Amino acid sequence: MKLENLRNKNMLRRLKSEELIVLATDIRKFLIQNISKTGGHLASNLGVVELSLALHTVFNTPSDKMVWDVGHQSYVHKILTGRHGRFSSLRQLDGLSGFPKTTESSHDAFDTGHSSTAISAALGLATARDLKGESHKVIAVVGDGSMTGGLSFEGLNNAGRANTDLLVILNDNQMSISQNVGAISRHFNHLRTTGGYLGMKKDVRNILEGLPIVGDVVTKGIETAKTLVKYAVLPGVLFEELGFRYFGPINGHDTEEMVKVFRQTQKIRGPVLVHVLTKKGKGYPNAERAPASYHGIGSFDVATGKPRAAPATNKFTNVFAKAICDIAHTDKRIVAVTAAMPDGTGLERFHKQFPKRFFDVGIAEGHAITFAAGLARGGMRPVVGVYSSFMQRAYDQIIHDVAIQNLPVTFVLDRAGAVDADGETHQGLYDFAYLSHIPNMTILAPATGTELVEMLKFTASHSGPVAIRYPNATAPEYESTLGKTCEPVVYGRSIQVSKGESVAIVSVGAMLGTALEVVDKLEAHGITPSLYNARFVKPLDMDLVQKLASYAYVFTIEDATRLGGYGSGLNPTYTFAFPDAFIETGTRAELFKRYRLDATAIAEKIQTFMKES
Image 1 (cartoon, rainbow, N blue to C red):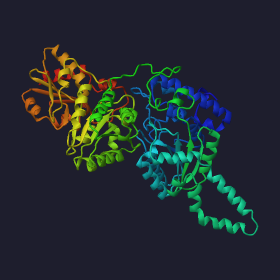
Image 2 (image 1 turned 90 degrees about the horizontal axis):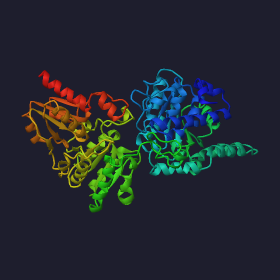
Image 3 (image 1 turned 90 degrees about the vertical axis):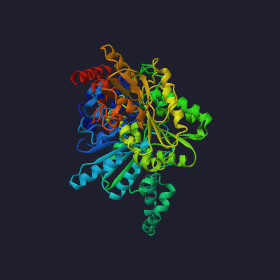
Image 4 (image 1 turned 135 degrees about the vertical axis):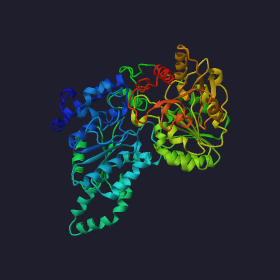
């Protein structure tokens, strides 16, 4: 069957195996064609086509509840639940979300966007079902990469203890965003190569029961040695010990086989885990060869697989990647830590140059921070590269294990501020707010690539924790400010970029480019403001605070939230920042314009303030 003929997902139950194969192929073509135009998570979704078909053949959403861990593998689920007509708007402003979203469809049971949450959320849904006396099914679909996160095991542990009906699908594709690491990954590698225990167990039982006189006695006796048998040959012993019935591994690209197993699980009471093996990027050779490159990708040419737009080489990420390696060559104490994001944070370059001083701990941000604290206590100077929104997952560790001990750990927060395409769960707007009130914490925001280099040099000798945050954007170098941004960083000191009268503008980090445009627009209307580059979000530059007292109007411009941001500590006339709200999907430029944070809107607002006062 072709996708265009699938009027609703209930038709799946009437399709024959060969029709499902045709439909899977057509869905893959649909995904490739659409994502090549909009960008998105391609490889992960190509890998779950048959799995999604099997799930929607057996289970009946929205009555049954399906929770997708992380959620970037939920595109096929969206296609099958009536949203394929909106795929041209995927990850666009006011368009289809790239993640499950309860406000978008009743078939999305829970909003997800960060890793390792699905089992806990699904257990909550299952428990609520039980308390209400309902009987629908609850399914959590979890990738093997998400299983490196501690929250997954907290969920498994409690689900096994609760003994409620819950189905966990472990989608094992041997690849999260970056290569999986650690003992859990090695365990899954073992599972992939181990023979099926369940079939062997059944065969042994049949043979023993067929023996005259002693068969039944021996069969019962062998149950007393169950633990020994399990530890010897059972591939799912880890999950069985946590209280789950384990099935697998099974072929995640055989819809018919998965349908049979899923229907079998419906007869079992209590928690069940089905382990399926899939191939990330399946059906598109370029994605099969390099799944990490096609995990989250912009628009691309289908025939060649190459991006339609040449990737920028002078992003803040690239500047950081080179600078931290340069510093590490002379300072042997520098070590790098990341939580499954060596490519996204630029630390893969460090990994290649200093393999013994590089540590990827998997999707385990809390562990990454405390591990870094131990490294610092042991005399090293760890640099932790994490996305701003992911660092939220390690809040307690930042306070308890780093800040209280005033340890020299440098947090490099990539994807800070407004983030392209990924929406509410990935916006890096909250780091100023959640870090600035922590004692001993220093927060820096570079305006240019050169300034980022100087800030990294500063952190290499600073005695306490430092956070440096910047967006996933080009690291500019402004001719008018080049000399000033090259100046060494002095603790707690800002820089005056231009001098004026009556009006002062303080720009924070990468918003300097916007601030320079604002100055130009105001000067065109006869207003000459002073412009300052904050550099430090914490501590505040007290000399700057005294200078600002002499201005009639003081404005701050920042790529963060107004509540808890830089301006909230400075108390200016007005802070140009994002409101106290969760910010939707869009490009940075679109979001700045919508929330009136573009240069034109800011200049107009400043003029209005001056006219009305």
